[in-house]
Length: 110
Length: 114
Image (tube, rainbow over all chains, first blue to last red; front, top):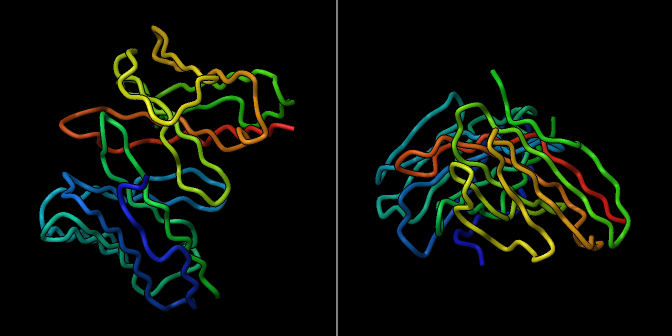
């Protein structure tokens, strides 16, 4: 089963609105990664969070790792049409595998 | 910069046929992963190799096998294909450190089984 629960499954926003997707785990995570997959494309790495309470920013994107290292969020400020895609969190599970959350599909209406 | 190369990009097979997907990882990357992604689904881990040795195995059917060769390229072999095998198959590579690290994905091979 899924190691992380990701919500919401879908998010439709008007261009300029903010967007947030959340990942939650029942167990403490060593780290968490975020990927973006454009429609018809492949997953592209965005960031990795390692430290408890860590906050990282990439332009309009803000990533947070919870204090207990059991949850994480990705927030996009003032969405643009170029933000369209599915955002996945991913965590290390057994062995070397990276297990993906179910993803949040973002659509942006211009 | 060199990326992960996958071939073929598209293939169409009949039920019970065999398919082989190829992956050329980024040079000097030591770990290769195979993922399967159905429509609207998240990528599902199939198998990984570290330094040409199988390092982890996920929900990969017995009809599937994979290996990594001396030149580090990897192949995913799928036999007795079923309709449900229709999916996008991604290969990814990484340079393993203390953690799994960033995965670099290829553009994928889209398999359609008729």
